[in-house]
Length: 141
Image (cartoon, rainbow, N blue to C red; front, side):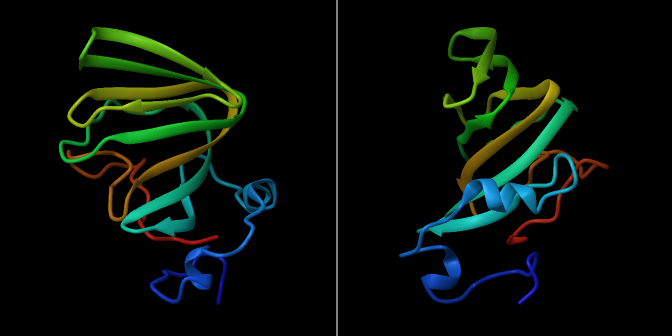
């Protein structure tokens, strides 16, 4: 199986009952803003991604989205959240959850390696029209 093929299979094929080396998975990624699935738990996917620069404003009306920074510093601007408009900054080892329906824009001045945790099938650019930054879903690494 190629390292970016779609997956459905057995627990072992879904990254369950095994140790997953996130640094090794991250080393296989050569593009920015292109999440790759490393495991599934129920209907949720764990995705690793490298990012740098500014991502477009977007929202996910039907789901929360978790950002866990593995390396670097990620800024997330939010509009219309529970605390109004705000910005959070995440460093390595820090996690934040953007609530469903909250418009947000991640950005990074230098490359950041992070894990996203979200339901299977969530489009990275949110509920709006697809754009140049829209990544294909369910690509495993």
